[in-house]
Image (cartoon, rainbow, N blue to C red; front, side, top):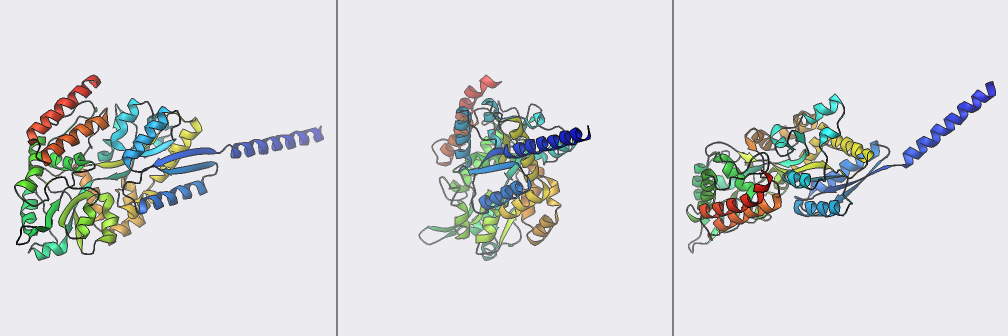
Length: 429
């Protein structure tokens, strides 16, 4: 009897060891698509964070795939989804949420979270970032690579122009009057330094939404099925953008390139620029002069759109993969990791708890401009996001371009864009 009990225990132990070995062997493999939109330290930091997670999480392997720009990433993801081979998780623009829902590609986080601690985690992100992450009472995206546009200014150029180097323009009017003092023209009328650059290539609608929000106008509703491109406040904001070149002559005429804007700033071709806070580390590393960072100037109110990428979890994954994806997302958005990410890139840590870490406290004490984008969240609104988002955004961008290059008046361009958008979105109302 005694022998057989011992034998049974040994057999049980061997069986357990075998099943443990099998489960260890049945590793959870995750494929993670990540856009490298601003380049530089972002990819290295993601590599480092992913490797740290894998090293402390036995049984999980993560293959981080760099998928190019945001645009490349959504294209690759949709191709993979339609081919029945999607990644398990990806960082994709927050504004692509409706597209991913319509493709039935993603799951809501409410379907995956089970504990009060997880519910508290999901409720702990900045509300401004959640506007582009939720619809119909469900959360489809978790904020990670998030940003707002901010104003950067060259303090040396301000000093030369007789302006206070520590005082950025607080209003549209001041941006114009400062811009006039900052624009340098030679005897032949050639401009060597412009007052300001507001990029209008790549995703012109995004920076333009800074102007519409400041003018207290909104370009779409929260359900993603209606746009307001022909709202008088939107038309007025576009007229102001056009006037910066044609009337006030403080900005270069025509389309202003997104990609070359930081370089133009470093090379003193512009004294002020609007660009993403995701460029903060880039500017800090490369500006050969003392610079400042400020919230975008106000008109009727302060305002800026939020921007950047969210984490999404894909439906066509096993339960183990979904669970592992959720666990990784909870970890990488945790205070220490989010702080590391922000310090490396300049993106806005998406939760208040990250800003309370010793690393972040030391960082902002040493570099106060890092707080500007976070503080601007109080005035921020959702980025343009609708069903058929790529088509709607293209229509809007084309309308903006037509007005900027003088092909149409702002009013004509916005009325035409609204008409086209309405035809597409009618079906979703």
